[in-house]
Image (cartoon, rainbow, N blue to C red; front, side):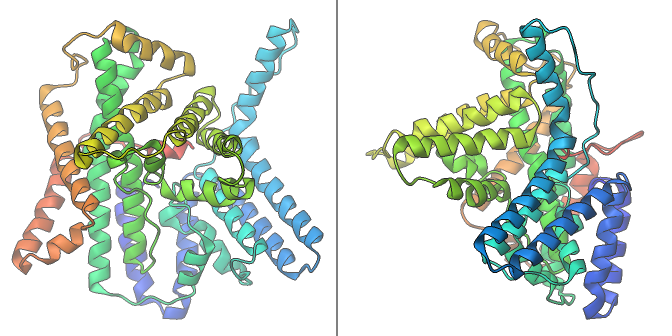
Length: 475
């Protein structure tokens, strides 16, 4: 069930209404039932995988809590990790490994081939597996107390707003909130709905409209000019932010309506002054997960500069693999890691004109990120290389000649300008809810109504509309 589908627009109000009508002590049970119903709408059989990951990590955490010997605790932890990573690996990477083996056989002259496999990736598996593993590791490290109620733990893993594309929550935050009954509070519900509205604006007005131009250029890149490829890459950067950021805003807003606070997942990433700062602002729940559960255990920045560089490269290579079973994702991850390693070699520069220098750093960072974005979006690594070469070699204007109408381009441009203004407001440490609270009641209500109408009018809807899946569902 997609957030931008009509079924969810019915599902969520019904779930919320019944949630607040139920006795406080039983509301979490309703959330558990509806979360599994939400997930089973994609494929009922995949709920078995969700339940398996939940059951194994729940059982391992209990055993770890009871075990006194360090060696025994470690073995139980390893067993839980192997099961979950193995399950994730089977569904996500079997096809890639079969293809690599066949290529290797061809290189060494072996005629035998393994038949290609086509295993459908269960939606959200990368997200809920990482969330469950984080809990188990936190119990092992004694950062959190073990959850003895299986069904409350199952809700922690399956909570529907963030189940299929994050944010990847920590047990120390979400489990505690699940245990706390939440009453209806108008201001909190209103703030949650506003955050959801921002998410829908980003997804159906900007991301789905940007997708038209991006797909036209990237699918026909051989006939596109360098200017078209460059512009499409920039538009994709906006699409990716609005698609994934839009999902995160809808998830955070929906959870807030229900009384649960999820972590911020995006914080104005294109205002970043370095690649490292970009990754402190983009998909924060995943970046901090890798930091806490891989980078820190590897030694983080301790030791020599070479050791730190190695640790960074390991983390971002794994991050690339997490995003997809293809060489382009590995290259994308390694490039992001390498850029941070290079940045670390140069000490911060003190300029006589700090504002101008900061702006220059932001523009430089965005240019580097755009290069990585092209690799991320391209059909393959070899295609990405050809497209990068074609940008300067075949640069020719105009850049819009792909059947994307002038009216569509104008609408997209205006909406991106509105988004930029919103991002700038957030960068100034203000929120939309804080700003609207300063308005008189009538003006505030009028603004809400106009924003809702804008989403309905300018959103990518219409006859035969089929809700566009979010980009990160494929990961």
